[in-house]
Structure formats: structure tokens, C-alpha cells
Length: 188
Length: 188
DNA sequence: AAACGGCGGAACGCAACCGTAACGTCCTGG
DNA sequence: CCAGGACGTTACGGTTGCGTTCCGCCGTTT
Image (cartoon, rainbow over all chains, first blue to last red; front, top):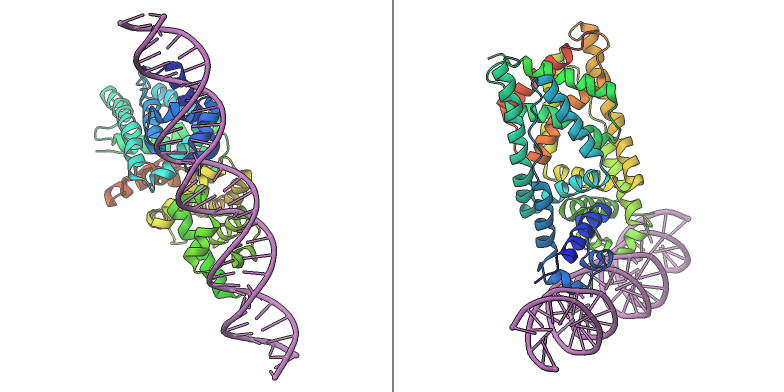
């Protein structure tokens, strides 16, 4: 019977190390050190660095975020952008996500895991957001939910991960207006 | 007098290794091996892995892309999106860029170098694109060039690096229309 | 009371790199 | 023709990490 408190300590340590040094330089020994745990305890649970990281990360990423439902497209959009903006500014997320995405570019297993964890959820959010807006008549029929997701997440991610500048209130408002106009233009 | 053919071989090897294993796991020995060169030749040129990578990468990234000037906003936009789309699908670029961006999240020197190399150029393109369009009356005055860049690069990058799916013709057209509508909506 | 199982710790052999040094070779400029 | 410099090769001691093994400790179960 593996002790759950030890498992939790290891999970936390993995996330921390992942943020600190990235997947490439993550070492089992460092994880054990940080978790205050023997290497044995880790190898008793996973047989691999890859296996360990995949299990832990997909578990964390799988926690579903509630679908937006504020009653209006503008409200939903604002909520999503706030959540994403906040999430991407968290130190751990803002370091782990780009790192794993880079790693996914060369490791198919990581790519698959990440897609299952992220893509599925994104599609659900996109379909919910767009579907409701179309039903309300706020967006034209035939609006592409995937395009909507790209238009919302893309610029935010680009700005936060690449330009590395905090979007301020004014920027978020401009972006919201831009996205709204873009999606409204998709006339059938 | 350092031999330039050797320098070139090392540069190529660094780019290749960077794409293959990423910055975190890049080793001088592997670079030397791939370049068919002694470690000494590398240490004669740079004193560090960091210094070496920074010099080589910023050199490559600094090569300026010509500013778009097709005579119309739609043409310029299409050209930019085609160039970016193509560039991001190149195997080396599509692996090195996310990797360095992830590394930039924890190494200020890399972040700074990357920003100087990328941001400056992006701003120039954005200002040129938007400036000309405004002058032609195709976009309202006061259109934000930075927002324009985010709207163009963000979704493309997100789709290519995160979703890992090739944008097809139809998608690119939709995106173009969306971006155009978004920017037009920025009424003074 | 005894057996069991997870635990931390220590050590193992192995592999990869680090940064440096010494050696002999080849090419070039004077 | 010769000196100098850049080169590849080999080797060095030191570090880090791997995945495994053995030990002794301790709480739980039986």
C-alpha cells in the first residue's frame, strides 16, 4: 500500500522541478531530493521519467474548467479571457506549458498526451461559447468554433509567452472587441 | 585566424542539435561530434554553451525579412500569413522556436536576446503593414499595430505549435477575413 | 509477538559531459 | 623553407544522473 502523502509530495516536486528546469533537465534525483523522499519511492510508482511526468501532467491538465455561461457572448468571452489571462500568468503554468509544448514537438507521446488534455477541453469550450452565441443570435450561423478558440487563445498566449508583457485592461478590451468583430463577420 | 568553414559547420550543428534535443539537453560534445570537429575548436570560439547558442541564434533570427508591400492590405496580409505559415512549418524552426521560448521563461539572457531578435522585427512589420493600410484608407486611424501582429501571429502560432495541425487554404482564408474584420472594427 | 511492506539512505556500476591539457599534423604567410 | 596557428585526437579528473540493490527502521496487520 503506497503512502498517499508521499505520492502527493512527489507530484508537487515534479511540477516544481518541471517549472524550474524543464522536462529536458528534469532528473529523478532532483525530484526525490525536493520531495524529501528516497529514489526508491519514485521507482516503486513509475518506471520512467517519461511515464512519471506524463501521468502527473495529464492528471493535472485533465481537471476540467467549468464552461462559461454568463448569459451573453460578451460576458462569456470576457470570462474566458480573464481565466486564460490569469492562468497563463501563474508562474508554474507559464513555464511548464511552453516547455511541454516544445518537448511535444519531438516526443510523440508527450504530444499525444498534451493534445488529449488540452485540445479536447478547448473544443468543448469553443463549441459551448459559439453554440450558445449562435442560438442567441449574437453570432452568425456557421461560425467556426475552432477558429474562435484560435482567435482567443492565440493572441493571449503569444503575448504572454512570446512578447512576455502583461496585457493590461485596455489591451484586453481591444482584443475582446477585435475577436467579437472578427467572429461576427463570418457571414454564412 | 579561425577557419570559417569550421565555424559554419559548428553553427549548423548547433541548430540541428537544438532542434533535435533542445537547449536543455544540448551538449558541447554532441555539437562537436555532429560538426565533425574537436571540442577545442568550439571552446576556441565561445566560452559557454549559453554564449554560443545566443550568438548563433540571434544571428540567424536577426536576418531581416523584407517588409510586405504589395499595394493592398489584403495582399500584404496574405503574404505575411503565407510566409509565417511556411516558416513555422519548417522542421527546425518549429522545434527551435518553442524550445527557446520555453527556455526564455527561465533564463533572462535568452529572453532578452529572443525579444531583441523577434520583437523588434515584428513591430517593424506591424507598423509597416498597418501604417500603409491606414494611409490608403483601408483601416481606420488609430489602429494598433501591436494588436494587429498579435492577431495575425497568435492564432497561426497557436495552431501550428499547440494544436499541431496544418492550417489548410480554407482556414487561412477564414483567418484572413477574421483579422481584417477585427482591425476594421477599431473605429476611432 | 511475529511477519510484512513501504520507507529513507547509502552505495553500486555505468554512461555522458564538463572544461582543460598535451600531442602531432596540416596549411598559410613571410 | 620555416614559424605560427588552427586543427583533430586522446586523455584527464570531476560531476551528475541513471536504475538497481541492500540495509535497517517503523507502523500495520495478523
